[in-house]
Image 1: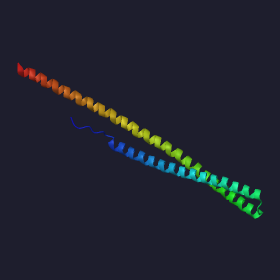
Image 2 (image 1 turned 135 degrees about the vertical axis):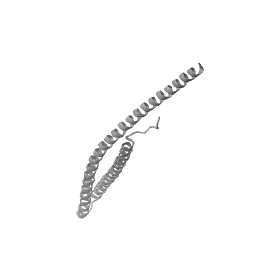
Image 3 (image 1 turned 90 degrees about the vertical axis):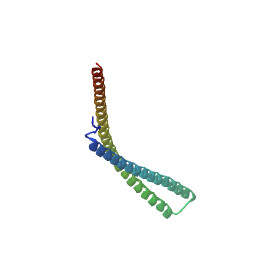
Image 4 (image 1 turned 180 degrees about the horizontal axis):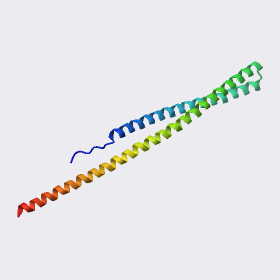
Length: 147
């Protein structure tokens, strides 16, 4: 019997490459999300720090111009935090979409892998049957020749 060849090997190979590509794209998006989350955390920490400094200076008595400077900077931080939050929302939506693509790609490759395994098992059963027939024929011919 000839060697096993899965008819959909090229399709399976393509599906695996596609799945790997989607997995890499998903990883890049997740990395971007972590970067934006870290940027938000830093902005938030800076906001807390500036508010504390402003409060301390107000208690010690300072010029109104200095307070306006703090308020302007806090307004700037608020805007930056809003922009980072918007980017995070967009990235999370993109990640959700990419995750669904990844699940679909994984499902495709898994189903093809299972089909290939099933075909291999069928092939192995056929090989075993042929070998059993050969042994049976050999035994039968041996018995006939012995008579």
